[in-house]
Image (tube, rainbow over all chains, first blue to last red; front, side):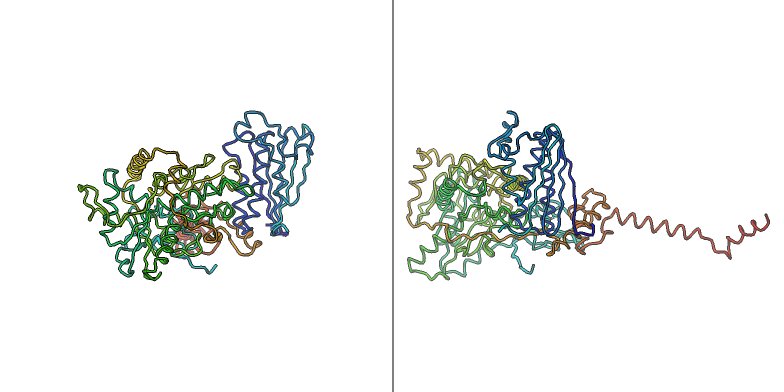
Length: 146
Length: 458
């Protein structure tokens, strides 16, 4: 552990690998349970991370989930080199989705990804460039939301 | 963490050979072999009875009530569940089984299949009216699943449907009825559940989901089955019972096998999950919000549902056949829709509602490494470091189920790295090499002097 009392962990997310979908978020969830973070907060972190992880699997050619954990908060940074989001405001709306039909057949792509991430996190920053990739940063405070 | 937990599941130390079979199969990593015996860690045990099922030496057992206990009460009521009837082929008339229970000394029989229908109706209504809040709702019927949620999935506590289990509801109802009759004082009445699993027994001593259980105790299905086989006259025509038994329809009776609860409650968007691994997997999926389109999850720890409980006598596949046949025969006589059948069967107006009688589960987080987050972070990093030095074979020879568990025990000061036989072997090898090296060090007075002498000659 470095001097600032922080842990950094990274997980690779493989494109189109639905068998392993959710592995990164599961691992982060188990780690946070080890640290004794309240269950409700772990749940928000796990769901937010899972949505971001799924977006990478569905839309981008793989990516990386990074978790930076301190006693006070967890920051999740999900980066990919995928197609990018042309209109972020539109993507934030519930039900808006660009997922192809076969993905919807599998029960994904309901257009709830970003809205759920926004709902679950205390702070979110979405940076995206078309044809370059997307970087989503979510912050979760370990004390309850007031 | 000073809470003490009551557990029905125990170790008969004299029979245990320390083989780690139970250690490997325990769903909550609650068993370690120490000094050649498989000890149970109370904070982690959920009383599912998986170790009872798996132990080749039969060294694990459940503390349940014996029939002698009923002598302490003036009036005894027995609550048989469908899993008891599943032990008998459908050719054995239910009246013969009831007569057998009377012959064993019980004064009244109230069938759990009857209370199941009121509970099913409550579930149906609750699920229909459930708007806000996370989905799916999770059944409260399996006490081992409730305990698994407490220790491993505390984030799902709010998703457990706040409705009584059929046995608890039956006990509340029947006890109130006896109280109203005024014939006996409440303390003179014994209400006994026939339990297919140790978790039901533990939940009577230490209920996690009901504020004040009215059950006096639990006698295992296998125990009662043995006693019944002794007293039932199998070839007799069904006896005329002196005292009628209140029982349910095919819907209440069907609750004993996996899928019966959902069938009785008529929920379409429901999952039926049973067995340790399946329950674990689905709870994990729910906690990641992967199943938002499912309304309800019927979830039991035992494969096959209650009739697959570790304290039953018949093979679960045979038991399932028995019960399904019995249910089918009942259903053929009913000749009505589910709603009509249930409406006719549920003819009592004052059956207790779950509201105000249930309580929310208290989390029992067992994963936490330290009370202090920063200290837990340090321990986690240390744990990862230890883990990377272990072979990762999960052989169990150290007495822990996995290398991960050993790493945790080491970090918590409960084990040493040389408890791993591979690490021990490496240490012994190193030590042996050291001794060999030492042995080759020839004292100057004996041999080393010769080389020096040669050197001198040169």
